[in-house]
Image 1 (cartoon, rainbow, N blue to C red):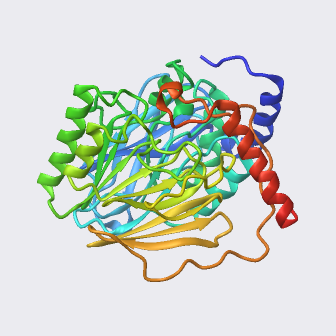
Image 2 (cartoon, one colour):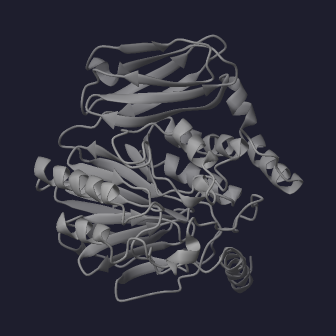
Length: 436
């Protein structure tokens, strides 16, 4: 169900949706296609039709390297998740979505291979500043990534159907040809209401084995295991702790020398105004992360970029893909680099190391560093940004304040109005200094 919207929010959404309304109408699709849930030689292509009806997905391997796979999803439905199986590892497929009233919809995907080297992208907090989100989405789509990790807060209010339309419209070029792996953010939840999570589960398909299906899950991409966990549930819950311990332990037993990333929307460490997640910091969950030699903890929530090393537990914060920027406020001994910029992070997985490059949305390099299993190994200094940065995005959605479930007990959140006002103040100060 879609909640009533304020006139200002409607006006803002209408402008954003108009950017791609024509493209959406061309193929007869309201959303998609997007690619999710790679497990072995199978993955899913999801689409939402403008009008109910069946769809067929036909995937053809590039270079004639295997048989064509075609699956039909019957029924008078709007939303379809079509599961393709029997796919060949390491092969890129071109696919087409067809059906009554549909035309020209399709894309490509790469099937994970056991050796698994390849490019991926990390980004998050795409809500609110529509122009920044649009610019960042275009930049990410040019990167040729095999998969993308979204650190949460896909939308400003998970209960609002129009905002999900907007997200998939802006991300369409990237997600039609890249495997999409998101984690749940607090703005998908919005306080204690569950409607946002229902919408998240509607558009996210994942292995349902965790305590919260589609929310607590894991994905294997060759030698990399990515574990995604609900940051706002109770982390003193024995069932949740057992799941985390078992999942990380299984990953290490299956591939002792492989890579292990854990993604929370709100992580253990941050130099931004939210600071560390007190539900995780110092908890049994942190003990489990360290015991299983987690290579990297990835988060968003604070709208900035940060790379750090917290006594051997390395981390990235990437929350600058569209939301109003936050200042770098809480630098600690763990912080290695931090910047308040709209950005995304490109990862290059190559055997025993991963190269991370944080890129501003105009292409300038903010930070580049190599991660091995024991440390950050930065071989070169970050390139300076251009002397004349682009004009900053201005267009915002109606709801941009930060609503965190259980924030009053966390001790790590300022307050809804305070964080929002601070972000606007910093943006104004930055604009004034740079002549924007």
